[in-house]
Image 1 (cartoon, rainbow, N blue to C red):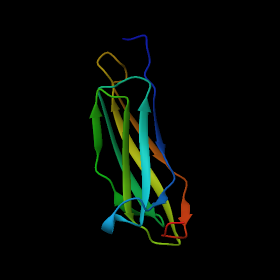
Image 2 (cartoon, helix red, strand yellow):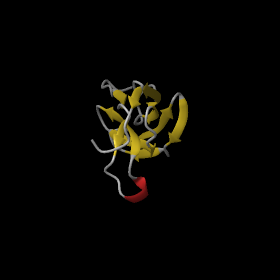
Image 3 (cartoon, rainbow, N blue to C red):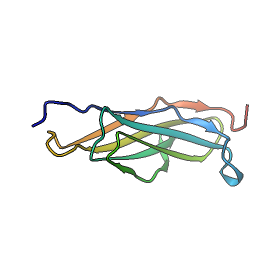
Amino acid sequence: MRGDVIHCKIHTANPHYSHHAHGENRHRVNVVATVTCTKPVAQLSERVGLYKNGTIYKRSGVATVAGKKFVKQNASRRCVKNKNYAGYAKASVLFPPGYSPRTAKLSDKSPTVKISKCKKK
């Protein structure tokens, strides 16, 4: 057993209108989530969901990294004005050999935000 400790935290940002994409990917609602650990771990995996009015609107793929201490993933879909959006993220951590417990599950939910405009301000 090791004497040092690795702490990991997950954070889901507020969903927001995003106009920086091009073509048909313009005018989207985007939510980003990150997992940050104090030291590199064997593996980090994260998936993000974007909810519109309480129903899943977009689910991201799983982002997985090995030997790192940070992972970031997002979910985005076409913006629909005057709707309430929230983000939810789930992650799993596989700690290096010798750490106990060997795995951890993390989750986080953003506040629900109303997006009233789907245009650049």
